[in-house]
Length: 160
Image (cartoon, rainbow, N blue to C red; front, side):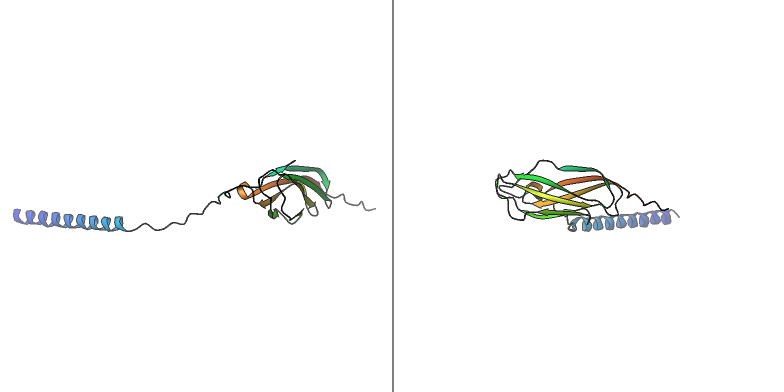
C-alpha cells in the first residue's frame, strides 16, 4: 500500500512538473512574439519656417437682440503681422445660416483686409453663437472668430 501511495505521489508530481514546464514554454513563446502594430493618429505639426499671422481688431461680435428673419452682417478687420503673405485656403461656418465672404488673394505682410460674415436668423430662436473657422498658413493652421445674437420670435399678426 505504501508503494502505491508513493507511486501515486510520484506520478502526480511528474504530471505537475510537466504541466509547469508546458506553461513556461507557452509563456516563452508568447513573450517572443512581436507586439501588434498600433496606429496612432498624428497631430498636425505647425508649419516650419516663417509664417503669416492674423491680427484681428476683434474676434467676437455680438449683434445683440434681433428679430427672427432678420439678416445681419458684420465685418471683421484683420492685418497680416507675419513674415510671409497670408493665404486663406478655406473659411468654414457652423451652419448654413452663416455666410463668409473674403478676398482670396494673398495678403502681404503689413497689409489689412476684411472678412464679412452674414447671419440669416430665419427659423432661429434664442441665443445663437456661430463660429467661423479660417484655415490659412498661420500657426496651428487656423484661427476662429465668433458672432452671437439673441433672436426674438417674430411678432404674430393679431386677427380681428
